[in-house]
Amino acid sequence: MKKLKVEDVLAVTKGELIIGDRKLELKSFSKDTRKIQKGDCYIGIKGENFDGSKFWKEALEKGASSVIIENVDLTNQDEIDWKGKTIIRVENTLEALYEIARYKRSLYDIPVIAITGSVGKTSTKDIIANVVGQKYKTLKTIGNNNNNIGLPFTILRLEDEEAMVLEMGMNHFGEIELLSSIAKPNICVITNIGTSHIGNLGSRENILKAKLEILEGAKNPKVIINNDNDLLHKWYEENKNKLDIETYGIKTTSDLVAKEIKLEESKSQFTCNLKGKEKTITVPVGGEHFVLNSLCAILVGKNLKIPENQIAIGIESFELTQKRMDITELKSGIKVINDAYNASFESMRASLKVLGEIKNARKIAVLGDMFELGKFSEELHRKVGEEVYKNKIDILIGSGENIKYTIEEAKKEMNPENIYYLENKKNIINLLEKIVEPGDVILFKASNGMKFYELAERVVNLWKK
Image 1 (cartoon, rainbow, N blue to C red):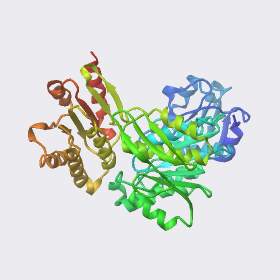
Image 2 (image 1 turned 180 degrees about the vertical axis):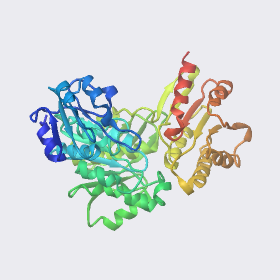
Image 3 (image 1 turned 90 degrees about the vertical axis):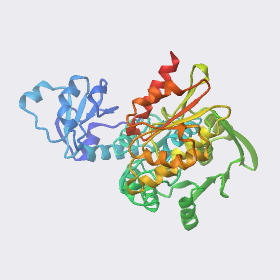
Image 4 (image 1 turned 90 degrees about the horizontal axis):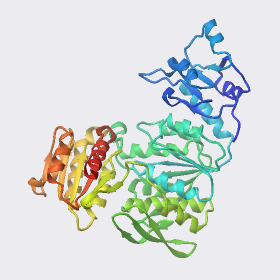
């Protein structure tokens, strides 16, 4: 573990040591007093509606060895009471977090793989991290901690790892540029350019610009992109002679292409050319998009000189972050697919395609609103309705303000008796109790704020009894 001391924090943040030990080593960091562990350094992050610096005493009482705070004046009694602890005052705790993470990153000469894209970031991260982990001790983004707070805290978890796999998310311009400047990746992955956050950015072309900010903090990086994506393919053609880019795809001629794809309910299989030989790869999740994610992981593995057999093992043994295509089989053969952590048109389409490919089962889609689509919301929700009947979904249940457009569109081709709109999502459980039959497969999909993952969990508990 590379040592990070109080004196280093003072230097990079231009902070002031109120009391404490300049030589104290800071091994672990926290921003949440509810999760403080003994010896942590607590950073009092200030947000729009919350000032973490107000809770510095609570952090110390719970075992923190040190705190980094802003806009707090200590009394003489405070300095007496907390003698033996370390208190650092900075001008801005959020900026201090960035600088400390930048410094911690600079201590490590290791491969850093950064991943962004409109959809598939988290699952691609999971696969890549498992592949990289076959050869290197690997630190990865936990869950969806991919923003301006989650990423720096991930970097601050570095100990003796030999590689790092980081997910980078964004809602607006400038956000990924910041993350890239902190992480300084060696390998930059862009999974696709879709419609997530199009309401904020105005067009898919602008989304591409925002995603390309991943290159800003990188020095001569290897860039790995999904060549099947129209905008990424166009960007590749324009930049292939300027940057070090590798491509993967299924439909488009690329550096790595999946062939002989076999899609099943709970797994996929494909072949690809590795060192002049065709190798069969098994993915433990169904869906063509996971084939693409796996191709991406193979290219990352090859660039890190990981042996082919270890790459294959990494893909075959990876586990998805929860609430992303979680499949639970219940009594009477009922299956629940919980893919309700987030939603965009592209991820809706992918999930409905997976559901539609399931054989010998009645397919039920429980769908909620997709957020941050702005003026494109009606159009994209209607396109989801088209995907519902294209994939021969048997029953559609919707709840949400904009999912009404999905319902309207689906009714053009589906039997209206198999379509339900419920203003109150709580009534979905009651409806499912009435209509679900043995062998049914139920998909839950919506943006995170709709909390459809809670419905999925309730259904699982209901039929487990």
